[in-house]
Image (spheres, rainbow, N blue to C red):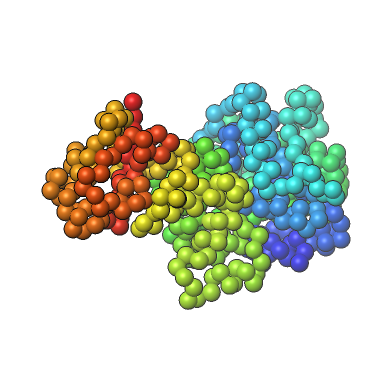
Length: 431
């Protein structure tokens, strides 16, 4: 399957009429360099960027050369697309830090060491820092009519609320990126999200007007990803963004986001965000399969790609902790301090207890009553002896004389007391 055919069946082309005539034939017959620009105004990409990253992944898998442009120059200006107010401008040092972070994240998806078509990262600050304002107006500005720029949707939406000349000129900067990469890196294709169509076609128009090259610069956009219920893709129920940085969105939280998508979204997302084949996706979305079969496959592949095997293992372990009715002592022992900390932070039943309280041991019934796990020692006694519903650190407790010790804590800090199948109390020793 060719690159364009791959994108087409996966639903990753926004509108096939957006393909400039000759695109498919040219790409099929030549090794093409294609690029996507990434905004470095933050130190992490989010899952809203994943669809465009996957465009580069498919481009490289098809034998072409992917280029990731991190806008060190355009990041100082800010893209008005999809925004109702001006962005906060960042310093060069902040942008350079953000660029390094984004490069590390892209390395999870693109092969920068491939023999025939290694991925490449470029920074448009490298060429814009050498261009004077008057030179830019003379060599670039005169080729793009003002009425052409005013007709862009990103500009028209901002005219009522106000747009600075800085942001108005953004499309010229992005257009010049394409021109520069076309002339100096042999780039023939620019890709991006559907909201970038106006900026991208400014580049193809600039190449046509300045160089007179017809049908040699191409553009492809992918649809903006949405959720079935109309809520914004890439946001949690509380409105927080889902980041690729594990310090901003933990592997467990990341995994859970994908695991909880709807059945309708799972099939669509498997096409866009994984490399599974048609047959594999059809098998995962067939009727009469166990609940969330497609979601589990989706969550595992995307989490593995972004956070690696260790991250996926951590996500699976915490999922087991929170949703299994019984968790073994062995599984608890396998949780790292960071994973225990996430458990404690995520649970509404986390009890902070002074470590000194358990230094010399404390009777299990006394502890349960004082901690509020039960209402009285009598209730604790019944839960242990009659109901046999209490477990400590994954082991069933049948002894009312059990002495709970600080030394029983995992990593000297955490214990788990479970009452019944659902009530799990994390005890965090402090002090």
